Image 1: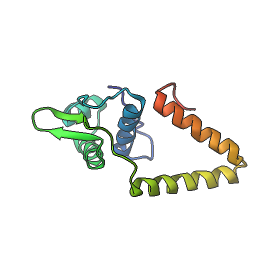
Image 2: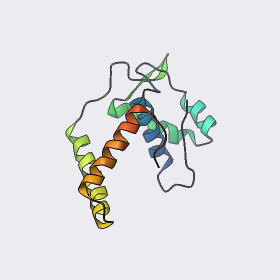
Image 3: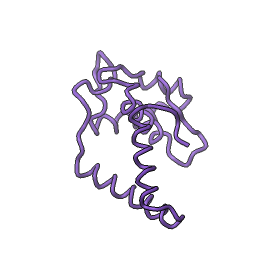
Length: 132
């Protein structure tokens, strides 16, 4: 499994791991029912604290992306992904509002902002190259 962590980033490691796993699911690299490494195993592979991995797995389980089984371990939710909730819609709106405001301040047009959003969405879903 390919997970990218930036130890110098201001983004907490657990949040980076959550984002990386969601990106893997969105791109199809991780499919429903796919097993994930154990908490200890992934922590050792990434060279991070096992509590960091546990926190990421717990958050993803609470959101419905993962299931934890005593015998099978952690798997991508075989029953499908969570739908769009009001909490997610609020989060999306909050984050886009800040990015839209900064884009406008920097001189980006609404059309260019919308085009960039579409490009980022398409790249995330297709799992194509890295975003620049």
